[in-house]
Length: 492
Ligand code: UDP
Image: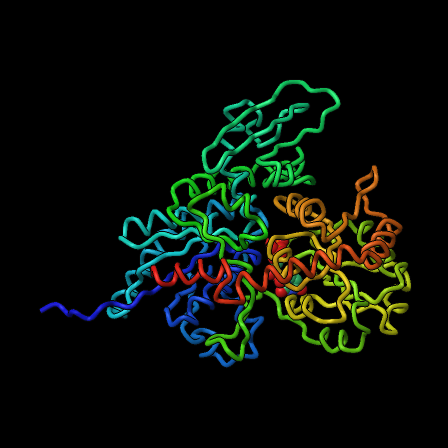
């Protein structure tokens, strides 16, 4: 007789192999696991080893199996020593290698664990082909997007832009056109105004309530490398396909922050801001960081006065010319403020950064602290931090918003430009650091903007108000994201 015992849910989480995609999905997985649901988190071998190396303080068994989360890995199709900086080759290889390995993995898990077979796959929107496996194997497919709801809305609008003849095959807006897309409730009402409009800004607007996208601010924009832009546009086309197929899209945002963009998509479930759960209350306790988080910066922050420190971080991907890094170093120094600066070992266009003459000696007295990687959420929530000089990656944006710090924006690529527009124009919690005619952010611009942001009470007040909304949305049972997440867990 078949067992009448109900099988327990078991989620398989599959991120895109990049820090900004793994981190929020790990946070989501920890929350799911804390509700007593088993999660198997699948990284590529390469990323898996990075995470294990960076969390080596944990005992071996705790690293692989923390509470209800099991960390496992599959090949990405490239040998360990292969250069993964060739993004096109990497993505092609992933596509080819992941599907079979994932199916084998699911088969093995289900044979070994008949009481808790995999019942649901949560796949990052950029690895949409994983959903085909879910369909083949009769598993519930769920999509996760680590970007904003507005970013998703923009990607879902690519067909309208192409149809209107407004984008070329590389995802570039045809010059001197501007468009207005309007929405009414969830029904798309599009009015294109296109043509040669001399002197008008080239923008795309989805609603008067969402900041417009300038022509160099699209979700796939990569100003320093048009080849990369083309690849990102192709990735956006994949995300478009996945976004259209998905029945449910979990998004790291909250309704009060992006209500209009959330309303544009009835299949979107805002469950953010996704933050690390309190380790003392969570059944698992690792961050999914690829680099070791240097906790020494927290002691350094303890030694600084309240609201005095500029925290400077550009996430895991952005790189700069040596000239630009020199200007940044000198601008921070000129500001006269203490600063904590994240300098990854490849920040100078893939190389180690060199500092201006005498810079390290001058800041050695304690005015500046440089580390390769920090526990960012803990830094942002530290009372000594005055503002966040950031590239506006969506994770960093959500973390900064949740901690109530004013922003200084310095976007590098893709959705970071639109996130900047949200920060500066819609939420009014930050200022732009602007490039000069040579594309350089000068030391004087950096110094001036630091002075302006730290002197601006309105920015700080607005930031604290949004922090309250963020706290409310996920921190209380009445919060919109809290309820959405609960609905999702009940559904599982
Ligand atoms: N991060 C971190 N330590 C650092 C810098 C960044 O833990 O020193 C984390 C940060 O908290 C965020 C992620 O790395 O969760 C970066 O994601 P984001 O979307 O901001 O930028 P990306 O790296 O994708 O450009």
